[in-house]
Length: 428
Length: 86
Image (cartoon, rainbow over all chains, first blue to last red; front, side, top):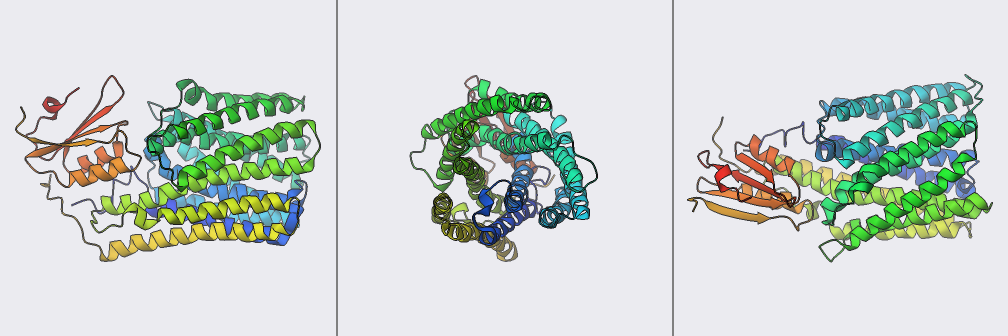
């Protein structure tokens, strides 16, 4: 009989660990939708408190939760890293992290210095804790793949993001005078958007594009050097930028060229997949990568113009880049984990992957996601569309939440009522 | 000629997680008279771990073209090295 514990816990984390990070990410997504309804188009002006609150709801609450889910799941599979006591580690991360995000959002809204302090404590503590745990395990690896190496660099970038954030919250709370506040802010979002979010997506893609869609692998020069080049570029610019802020202009152009080239290469890879048909996850990848190209193109233009509309569109497309890829991964991970854990526990009545989340269900989310993008773009011209965008955001993440609940119920139902397969292998 | 029956599984053109799905199905068909011979683009570590944990003997080897040959047998008297075609 298969082991009760499933495929050795040192290989795959308990299903609940991954599910709950996805679930909290989806709940923060619903919160983001509600905030859009409340804040309206003021979110499009990056200088407003509303924009800052929404940005952190999305980047911290949504993206970081999803990326923690992906890391807990992917570290054993992609990097061969065995996280011991994953449930305990997830607890030490998730509860303070969630409290920290909510506290930070309240701190932005109220400007109360003690809230900034509390948020720094919870967020800094929880993120540093998990970054240290994951990096320690990754550093112990003897043989690194391009993906595991990229994960190391992305996690280092996350640590930098938090350090710079702590400087900023200390300034905002009045603890320090914040002489370098604007430079730290520039570094904070550059490391956050490019060093952490983009680098992690890129690193994981080196493995999953080839594995999920049977494409030719990435050229070694790309998979082995792109993450290092991107990170080095950010580090050098950050240091030089402390004295010559204009350096970021050159770096932004280089980043745009590198990331657009990566996106084009990945889009080409997706045309080379062996299976001619494309499911929703492939389209999520295509939308995400195209959004990245558009975002980078607009970013370059905004370096030389002051049209705020283009800047807003650049941010919007970047958000849709990151979210689209997350959704693509979500529709692969949730059905797989449900099926895999039940199979490894020996339930031959386990639902097949398409029964956990049907491809048509993922397709419907794809249309919701596209409609959300269109309404956001329309709302930059016609203000009332922002309410449709807010409602569609709630629907998009609500849809996701429902899929997680549905998969979890199926999992529990099979465990309670399912019959087990006897392997009849001699003991010992 | 081997006295054991080979169950062939060429997973090289299958999208993840189909190789794992089919390999686990094949695992359940293994008895004392047969063995699984799987071809894959990658070394399927989760599958090999799972099979090893269940008491199967396993062997995985990469050839010079980058393809992985994965052999799994239930019968302990099967010598997987001898059945390897690399």
